[in-house]
Amino acid sequence: MKIAFSSPSLPKAGILAVTVAADRALGTFGRDLDQRSGGQIARAIEAARFKGKAEEVLNLVAPAGLDVSRLLLVGIGADAGALTANNVGAAVLAAVQFSGEAEVALVVDDHALKVEPGLFAAEAAFGAYLRSYRFDKYHSTLTADKKPSITKVTVQVEATKDAKKAWDKLEKIADGIFLTRDVVTEPPNVIYPETLADRCVALEKIGLEVDVLDEKKMKKLGMGALLGVGQGSTQPPRLVVMKWNGGAKGDAPVAFVGKGITFDTGGISIKPAANMDDMKWDMGGSGTVIGLMAALAGRKAKANVVGIVALAENMPDGNAQRPGDVVTSMSGQTIEVLNTDAEGRLVLADALWYCQDQFKPKFMVDLATLTGAVIVSLGNEHAGLFSNNDELAGKLTEAGLATGEKLWRLPLAPAYDKDIDSDIADMKNIGRPMNAGSIIGAQFLQRFVNDTPWAHLDIAGTAWTKADKGMVPKGATAFGVRLLDRLVADHYEG
Image (cartoon, rainbow, N blue to C red):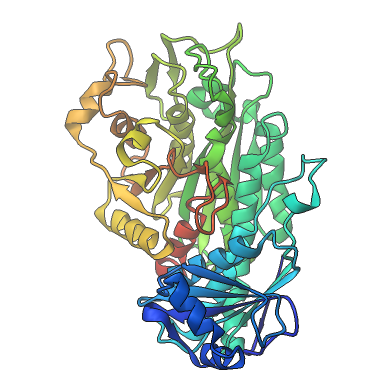
């Protein structure tokens, strides 16, 4: 879908959307439209009990006195900032995406806003663009009414130059988000460790440095935890390192690490059959890291960044890891594997240790669809945040609020750590049943970060949505790309 910007003007055809503030407050452009329509807009607002609340939409078909096929009044509420703009753009696109029309123009009227009008316009375009995402490549029989008709969104605002400048950056972030959504949505016979590594290598064309560690290299490094997870699959595991060198030479990087279980049967501790197909997105953490690195490189971020994804397929066969096996991680610490379905923490153990050992980063943030327990705790509204560093946790929380990708901090403590002490190894990979499952997973990971500032984001409840939600259509959400891009932009760019 194409995004454009222009000064406010009345289109000769297509669909027109106009912002309305709280308490039905029309701006200058809206009042002029009402006059042209002989007061039809004011009457429609009254009849529909339209209040101008944020994201509220009123649809007027074939409005009198106007050439457009329909007019949308879209509320921005009384506290209209960037997130409001995102959701306004998404609401407009959602209302007209299958209308049969090809173009929609959204006028950002002269209301009081919390951000500059040009930025508001760009953020509205961003919301519409993200909502337009579709994954239709495997559909062969879609009828016309099932296909989106809108091919162009023009956001009209007086500050056109400012809007275009802001959009240049947002478009690159959107590209990263779409990449994440693509790789997470692909079926597991298409995306597996080797092919996902290939998708990473393809990002060299936008300036990333990419190195792929195969089984031989990982074995030489002693990555027994990661290798153990993948040994039951015919698809061999991979560890991929992506580097973006946009900061000062010699400046320590910031680092992001993603869990990449491209399909998770649970291994020998096999999952129930119902909904097992959802486990293609157990690589959502790695998908976010890949999209984030693409976004940072695309917008030429002025920071040194390392992205690492640990990729494996967790399958049951005669060579699969068994409950009761003991593996030796790259750190030298031994792990008693009591449940092969607690595999994400195993691949992350080696990836985190490798990251802090090789790159000495300022901090590490890992993302993982790690536990069902975090969904019990937080549902689908927040990701779980665990950290050994209050400053990093605060910055992440702040970035989450700014982007709408919200985090909720949960505790780490020595009392929980005792739950993973093993009788025959340094640790076991699970704690007691039904006891602080998300916390236990984070406690396990903390044993592999040394003294590096670190945060763990458990995104099991936020990596995928079963229904359309604002600027996130049903499916893979790419949760974390906007959040972590914002973290880098606000605190770590020169």
